Image (cartoon, rainbow, N blue to C red):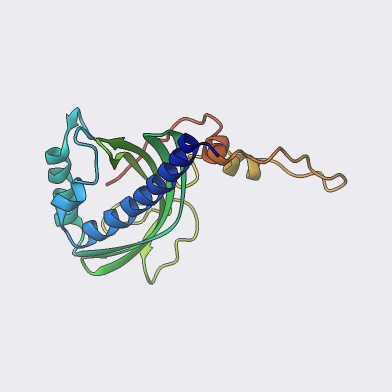
Length: 209
């Protein structure tokens, strides 16, 4: 193996671990309300929305969200899939099971994050983080049925947990022919699994509040 190839593979391993650490640091800093540590995980010119950019704008937005919605939170991250588009850019999906103390209710949530990562001056950051929700509900109320996002004092609404991937709607819209075996596509490539599952689907509009 040539030295350049070996160095590239080591860099890929170190980058993968650094990106995994980002997800853990995100949860810890958010739950402990260390907002400086939290926004430091994002690119310096992160887009916040409404034409606003930068960590100070992000800190103000996160502070307002946490201070007025939740007394406490706990984010439990699950599997993390990472794909590199080049040595300094990657995408990823992270599952998260969350708990929120909000007023008189204890709200549990299942979601995933669709992430874009970028290495800037040798350090990995979030370039974009889209929260895609499946359900949110009081711990004593099962989220059966439609409109599974059920926050206290708000009208229920639809999350975007399944909207990133066209396979969800395709699965339920098709009925298999039980008389013949189904066709099977070739396995998705190592750094093309997420892209292959997305199949060019548009990014859904995310409601975060």
